Structure formats: C-alpha cells, structure tokens
Length: 81
Image (tube, rainbow, N blue to C red; front, side, top):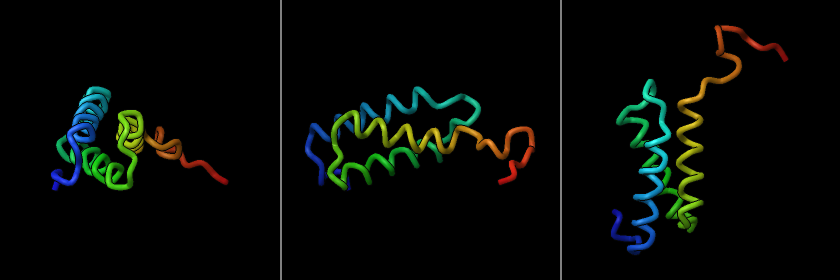
C-alpha cells in the first residue's frame, strides 16, 4: 500500500502524522481518530499533495473537524437561521 510512495513522501507523511497527533486534545484522542488522520494523509499524497505543509494541513483539518465542537452543539443550543 505505502510502497507506491517514495522515501521523501513517506518521511513527510510520518512527520505530518506525528505533528497532528501531538495536537490532538487528550479528551478526544483515539485510535479511530489517528487512523482517520492517517487515511487522509494517504488520500492527500495520492492526489499529488505530498509536501510536509500540504500533509500537515490535511491532517489538521480532519483533526479539527473531529475534535472541535460545532457552534450549534455548544451547551445544547441550536442556532436559528
């Protein structure tokens, strides 16, 4: 699976995963979240976005979407349009 990537891309993916995992809040850290981040890094690299910055941004987006509550759910309030 990862044999499709060169050594530089694998190193960037590893560094990006480490970077993102260090930013995950303790209360939401889970193997499932880490796997979702890793899957996104693979998807990103397959699309040709292989720089460390691109991979970090992709991983952070997944982490933030999962770890950050939406405004409508804070305190159980529902925002009306």
